[in-house]
Image 1 (cartoon, rainbow, N blue to C red):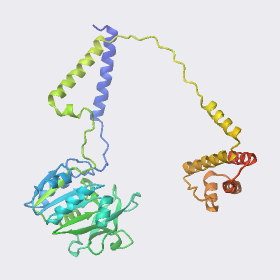
Image 2 (tube, rainbow, N blue to C red):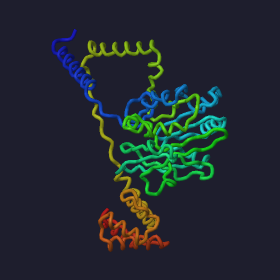
Image 3 (cartoon, helix red, strand yellow):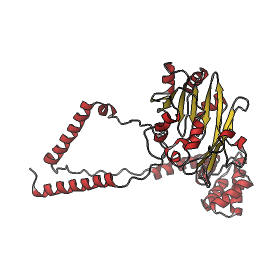
Image 4 (cartoon, rainbow, N blue to C red):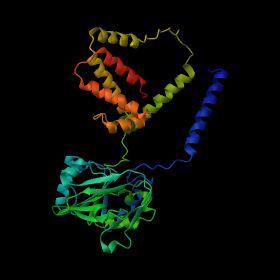
Length: 396
């Protein structure tokens, strides 16, 4: 049994743990602004609101959640005719097999709707579609509108926080049709497209570059009309909602994932952990072996450097030493000041002088001397001494 002092320690530790647990449970949770776009997430950039309203938006239309890879799902060929496959996420990078199956699915008279800022190089190469995303912090609001005049009165969406200016900077102007654009872009609607339609056999593929429009945050901030108008281009009797290609998709990566999927193994794991804890409390003893004094490893880097230097000096290979010193000096400039050392011209001298804080004349003489040495095929000891002096005097 535990003595009185041990019991007090156990009680104190338990009380501290209990306080920590309660503070974590009841403290206010910070708002999670990460992109998720899953149908179950109620965070600002989840899609819980949209998924719950899909059946109201599409009357007499069944909505089915797909939690499989689109390639595997479409390969089964059990999908409903005249259906639509909806993908919404901040970044969607389809591989070649997925895109081929989606194009085949659309060519049979179905609809594919994709809303994302990026679509990947496979879509870019296969369909000649590419987006440009400006990741700078927005200083004003984004206004997105549809081209159709019947939508102009109530189809404008207003976006700011968590939104990025994404437009199509490359499309096939002959086959692709623009459906929407960013109003706030000064370049004009034609160069500010963010919603296009691509014909594919008997069906169509819609590419939309503003996924934030379908998030919980913006649907509850008065942008539901815009989202409804965009989705009104989908004409289908059955909607497949993708739950696989999502940023917020829950993926269990723990090595214990199989154990936790089996109720019996889960309970056995918990019982074992509780048993180990009880054993530690009642049986553990404060025993410790004599700590052996371990001699720290000797730092031989100085001796190694001196040995290498002696070898170079004995061989009188000044050219090799000068080459290595110049290479090392330029590598420091690249890594510290992010300057390209491909061309050591006057522009480079000006930038290096400004970033390093060295006088322009000193910098110019050093670079000129480096260029002079790089142009020589044979070097002498005086060249090495002069180079070493100039680089040491240069304040990096």
